Image (cartoon, rainbow, N blue to C red):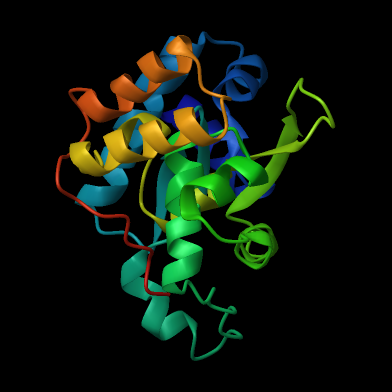
Length: 213
């Protein structure tokens, strides 16, 4: 096990970016389930020993990065990274994308009632949102979704663990989308209900709060 853990650490350190579980399984010649078990054990070891580095999970990927406890010391010798300016408008737009992704800019603007070009462009610039494809509809509008960086910044290891939004507000959004865009049919409404009801891992009445780094 120690040799396997050492290989995992070596891969994550060398890559410096999220590595998919399937890629680790292939490199280590083990199953994805075995990768998951070893990663959970490694992550727990890092937490218990209060190390200067940590391993985080981002959906089906893992990444090695600096522990939050070291940030204050790190910025004294490293250039402070540019902190995204998440205004209320940008945060509102990001929340809509996070809970309704993939989503078009037109759908976002129908929900917000105003142009969202600036907010969406800023989110793409900050690496929190990316162009995930195109909608199979007239004009083939671009679809937007959140990135792994979004998960890291907001300390969420999976989209399934997003805080559950206020049910009344979610119902209002769903009704607005249904009436004004016509893009969401019964299937998407059911999907929305899944967000409203949440999963056993979601925490109700929380808000998305980015890392203050």
